[in-house]
Image (cartoon, rainbow, N blue to C red; front, top):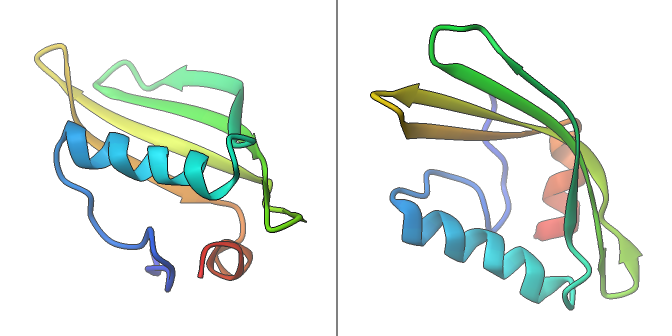
Length: 96
């Protein structure tokens, strides 16, 4: 999967860093950022997928997109979270 070229690209390790990243999304959108889940599914082997639409505005521009979160769970704990977007070039533009 290609890596984006925006301030949120790359790995964010640990709960505090991940929460800080999502907090920054809220800050940059003046509190308008919201994730609206549409689908929750699992493979029954430790992967959970949440497809969601996120909405918000930044500097008067709509930054909403369709996204998905992929959680890998081991021993009842989330050990990896991958956040994907439907259009990486739009995401890069919105969060440059």
